Length: 307
Image: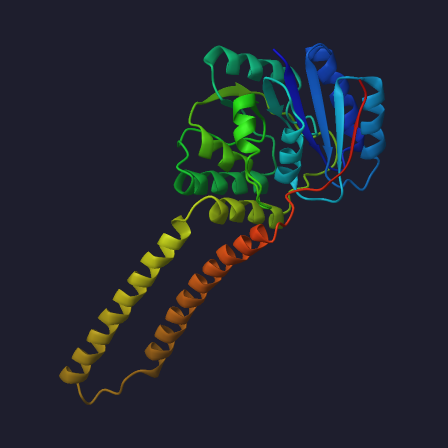
């Protein structure tokens, strides 16, 4: 059984070299492929990745992207170059311990799962990252019909079948977990350790976390459009009730002047609802335009490997 490990690399000069060394030490070089995807790093990660290609010929494949495209785009680039029967996706900062990779693969084989997600016994992320993950998890449950007890972690193992289905997606806004849930429900989980970051800070800013949630919200479900329809119906119902109330009050108490404040509030609320729905439709149309315009999911500048 061949094994591939896909690691998106972003400004991880202090950690990516030791991580590759640990992986080879834990798993051995036989039937092992490590795909390093440099997602536009601005430090010395490029040199470290090239050195590992030279140190482990036939094991390490280095994919250098033309610019920074984002984690999920970088993972998709790595999946296009991963040839193992089982493919593990993991972070570049040692928060996913290398010792757990073997357990993920063995669990996938033993249970004949298409995908196995790591379920952290204790998460070591910053509280803001944990909050964003919790919100994304709840949104995925509604939007993607995700099982409630499934945690969508970035540390996971996919079979080659699942990889082939995932890489069929060509759009510029990939969300790997959404693609997984779209092609299979034969999914397992495995409790694993989650370590503290060894160096630096997470590259996930608030804006990136919002963008990730928006990818899931818009790209993989039409539920938001249906919700906007329900919101419009609800707003119309409220407006009808308020209109009837104004007429009744006018007939019952003709001497009381009509309140301008209530009219202004109603106009602002309904105008806000309309703008939200227009913005949501515009988001769908904009992404459709960018997809039809063949906006690239990623651009590979160079692939370095030695046999």
